[in-house]
Image (cartoon, rainbow, N blue to C red; front, side, top):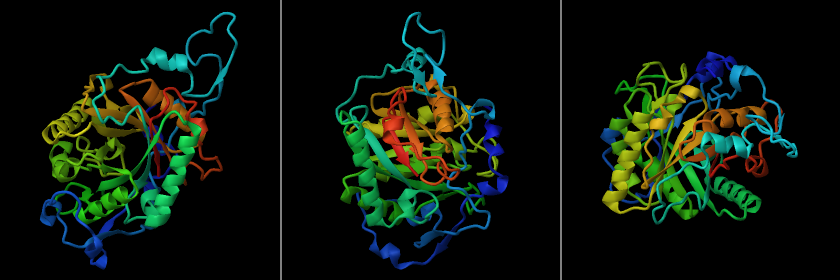
Length: 379
């Protein structure tokens, strides 16, 4: 699938990135610093004020990752196996996209991984996460609902998953967009906005109160992940904090404005990230970190066979596209199943997945996929 096909479903205007305006607010005074002392606010180019997302007239969608199957055609159920000939005399079975266990096995699932270190979350548990930013109601469930309501909803989703698959305990999580891509260069000229430490610590506090783990998500814009990631050591040195990176907004090579073109991460960049996390695990004697890599296009991750697996880091390739169930299954098959790395994840969009009348996929639907996703995100 060509990455330009993503844009056939939405006009360019729908890709306008939410602008952030720094406004003074008393909210900062309520923050509790968690863990070690963070770097100074000057390091993130902001005054000690709270950023607020404006609502642009362009009608920015929650995410630009509209999902389509190869060639823009809808996929349909197939009889028997998804690939190859059927076994003579075998009973036929209908598989939807991404469900056929024989196809998954042919592609290399389950992936041979390093021996599990003590404290590894995957695959013994399934992570169920709410994604977003508390300063925007349009970037995901984490910010759409007030804190108490949001935690209640997350716990309800977690219970649904636990009920659907009793053999796999659920680990709830908050997945905070800690660096947000921007349509303007900003003072640093990097087309990204780093959230103030007060905001990050606020969400970390929520996670601790609710017995959740925390993910921080990085949208790099025009900044190299190698210079941006070390800024978060103060937070990632905690055993219950993990990381997500978003190729869609990594536009260092193309120099395009975020939202006008889909970005990419190469295996070399992902290897830098896992190497950095490995060093933190060793330095602070931590349990393994989980790294989620969002993906909904072929070129979103390049040279996947060169991604290095390390016992200190568990990599989740996370199907990040929105659309109807048939499109989401097709993308899962084409970009996750077909290019195995280590573990798989699946994102559900409360609004974008259902805006054309489709039903939101259920835990039962997703558990039919092969491999079964061990990271589930709700936006």
